[in-house]
Image 1 (cartoon, rainbow, N blue to C red):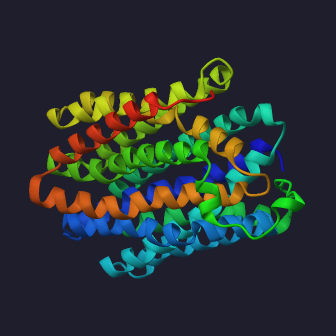
Image 2 (cartoon, one colour):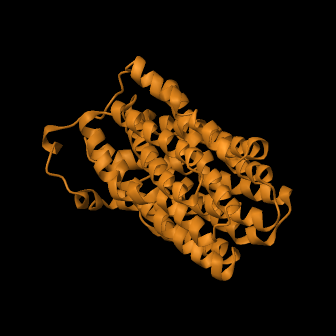
Length: 379
């Protein structure tokens, strides 16, 4: 399978995933759920992935990516269909676990394949193209979901989203494409522990950066539907605002393949943190839709430029034959933050309002950018 084919299938699956996160939040608000309950919903997207991402990465290293991608797609479809069949808060809690776990397996497998494609010097560019695909789907998912909610209702929108992961299933089942995998050296073929990976200073730095950037991304996904609802915006308008964020990530990633050989990877990563932190500082002071769209666009530029650089660094600093496991460790770090932080965000939002959430995230990103910028780096 060629890179563009894999990215096309990923766009379809991720459109369903990104749309479902917004749909879950807004439907829970429609059902009069508290901010803490909404935070629990978002946490459940990450609970099982947090526990099983490393195991999934090891499995993918051993058996290849095809069947994990297939199984992950099936889980995403089942999770999205469940609230259509059983419209309730309980169904949302179960569905968020299914969707989150299924897409985690899909995501780890796809990253392992992209890292194994082509020459090592093309790796940053390949991850840039994959990140560009995620930006396309990150824009399509929320925008389509917001329009669908206002047009056909919440429950029917779940059924609409469940259609998007079906084409990857059909392609994988009927065509049985050959997916590349990382080569395993005999010396690296067994007896591994996660702590061996964490012993690498370069890999630890990548994981810290990845966790902070993921926190910034997760806060946006969690808090914007709540903030938009509190200031009286419709579902379509919230979808447009969140779509603007995704369009910005698309725009910056569109030029990343041209810049990856000219911009130092760690410079891009620390700049992303500082831009995102500054944007979060001023977010709560505005309620105008054009200004919120502008801030979302700037935030998308900041957070969007970092992921290809992070993934290229992750693959480069991973031991041979353990790239899938390293992606799993990164996924675990991300999902630890995604599991704990929505609960914290929900509790703080219920007690203090959304303003302190924005400012706390700004402080974390600013401190992280300062810390990483002071560390010695090879690139």
